[in-house]
Image (cartoon, rainbow, N blue to C red):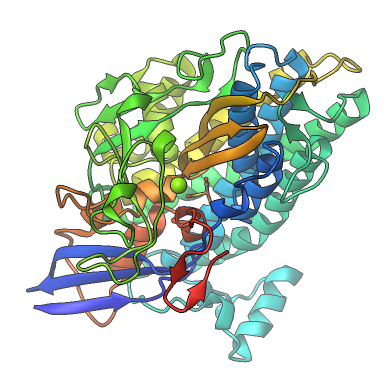
Length: 518
Ligand code: NFE
Ligand code: MG
């Protein structure tokens, strides 16, 4: 049996190691390892609860807006104001998060994944007049392929023209991400770590100028999503149809739902949201979300056994020499079951939940590609779900902008309670994101995050069930073990973020190897 080790797997955020055992060209089993401990939540302990909004954003440079949203919802609930957020606050939160998600979806397809499918070296033979493409051509023909090199690949299937076109869009996508980030900063104050989303609402006031400024950026983004991003994903899906069949993994998705459509309901599981919550299996049935069933397991993680449990009981005692363990990531499970999170999960929950606009979007795209909804459980199904998710949110935002009441407050004040508990569940671009807090003496006694990549890149659990990425790799054929392009494509479709996945808490003073965490 051969072994393939990719360490680190690049063009993702952070430090992921993938090991695959291969027999006769087929992956028998795979292991996903988060190789770094970060000890992030320790910083929160003993602090003013309001610091969580600022500090948890620093878990990640890619999805801080999602962490700020989860933290604000968590604190709203702990402060007893979850059902009192003003309408403008609800809408502005949606707009800031939505713009950040759009930037993130574009990042994932063009800058983190497209080079698995698009041969950017085709620009070396470009003969057109576009100055940007010619500057990249000059760069490439000088032999400076560095930023564009794919370590593994001999399986590019697009035509020369399509490669050049997609390469041009790779460059255009930078500009689009900037526009989306600018839009988020209009109400968020700044990006990547916004200062607008706070417990109680949003600090910005909606003015007609700001609304117009947001809207023209949004219009450009919608144009890009409709006429470039979604068609490009479909083009890649048609050229690589086998990737609509492989990389499915556990075939059970979990969504918390996101984008508040009301704030009078304090219970986040019952609250109406644009993307629905719930679990979806391969048979396309929607199972209700039950937060009480979520537990993190640690048998194969470098943590003491007593760390297994619900997020509200979360303990994290690092044991770097634990026998048999192989990751710093814990294994979240819902009722003991492995679940994939991500845009696929929220698109499926919304689609199976019967949202007419989502049904039209998904069915339309599947028809153009010529596959059934089951193909969504696949490598390129994840990319399609990202693009469709981007369109769904972008198309929802103009109406929200019109709902804003210029000049009216977006924030209510509150008291930090002596003692309380809270939960903030939302969706980051990469999937279900939850924050939990316990407050004692007006200080943070416990802060726990269960993060999308903790689900997706998790190691085997207490019952030795492999995590979603591990399952997605098992059984796939590797054409050339020295060039395992299949592994990169499948893993990147999950868009792993290891910085997020290993955010975990270390008890003060714990010794980790020779590093003293305090
Ligand atoms: Ni660091 Fe993150 C997102 C969160 S993934 S990117 O999206 O939460 O674990
Ligand atoms: Mg955690």
